[in-house]
Length: 311
Length: 151
Ligand SMILES: [Zn+2]
Image: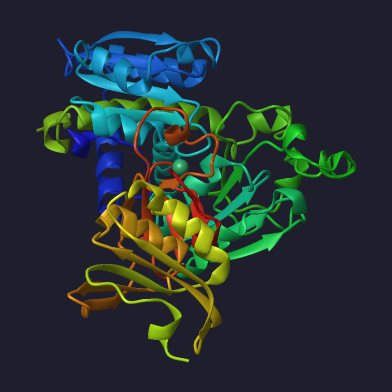
């Protein structure tokens, strides 16, 4: 069943991504469907993530599936003896699909190799979180009417930001132009810059974040600059207020520009931006529901035609 | 001075030649030569070599190494040569060629990798363009000369 599992965004083609987005669109039209009536979805959260778990469980419930699962409150308690393999084997006796989040990198891929039922990766350490990327793509397409030839400005922690790295990889199919805005300590790692060059993705890097650096953007993708990521706390103090999006920076932006953020936000987007028509991060989070409905159906073998609202 | 005079010939077995001196001890360990009770083993250290200046070589009688053992050597001593000897003749002589996959040979250096936290075999892919090994599970890349072996 490995084929229907969703582990990583990296290996999906542009066509496969668009196919999943098209499925998501059917669920936006009509999110409440009994397509998965009689199916059982397991949500195994070896690492807590209330937000992601709620989104998956809502998706399963709106499709009529039943949900079982657990959240491990402490990272250590699942290591009191049972291996991941044993847990997966046990749960696959009960469930038709397993949604899992794990603190170890590569855990989801290992699970697909041992599991007789499909696995949906809801995040494995700092490695992959494909449904986040899918909802980002969905939102970009929803707000811009296309994925191709867009100017995307990514701001904040480009070094550790897993969502940023996956977004870059997924967008490689669509000829994007990236503007990477980050403090020096959190700039995009060399391996991703090399990746961009290999994939012929054009990009610029800058430390400056002001109204001029976002003037051409179709999408501004904000991420959090976290104190604990800095080795040099003087540097943190110097930059901590630089990478905050303020409402008065939005005066010269393009009309179609939308502001995205993977959430949760701390202070990197000022509260008064929420009321600006460019703000789109709450709708973005809602799109997570549609994409997770699509991913669950796809994992269970349903096609785009199976889920179309008008046949 | 000819090679034959440096280390005696064997009738049947394996010769691993052109080992850099500093890799000899590691190779002896990786091949578990102490576990070959029916072989006589000759180890030459700091021999003259046109290519390397100085080199080491190992001759093992009556033993042929497994693919897994040889895969380990491709990483440790990629420029060495392997000869299969039958009746004092070189039956086969070749360089070590890198396989594309390494199953349970290399330890992943990422402590947060699933393979370091679960009783399971490791798996690495060799990327010829970058000359690195890449963990199948976590994606971590390792330079071949920084590799740690599973045994
Ligand atoms: Zn690894």
